[in-house]
Amino acid sequence: MSVGDGEWYARLPYPAIDPLPHMTQRNRKLIGVFLILGSIMAWVSVFTSVYLALPAGLPPWVLLPYFVVAGMGWLFPAMWIIRWMAKPE
Image (cartoon, rainbow, N blue to C red; front, side, top):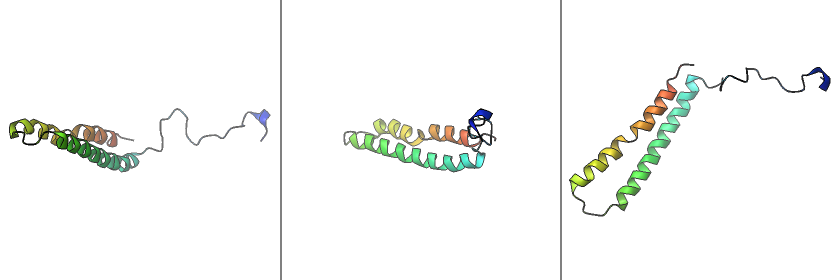
């Protein structure tokens, strides 16, 4: 192979315009499981830290909205990740 024949670069086995052709639904599910677990651990860490920073002895009616947000808030990132995982190939 010489420089003059126009083939001086390695050809890709797939078109370069195709975004991540190796990203199958099976691969997305594997990555998604770890993303969901990581996001839940991060969510728990952040909200536990915030809870420990709150003043002691707050009445339950003040803590209730906090626990509702802390308990349900992880669902939004998880829903986005699950939607990404379920995309067809």
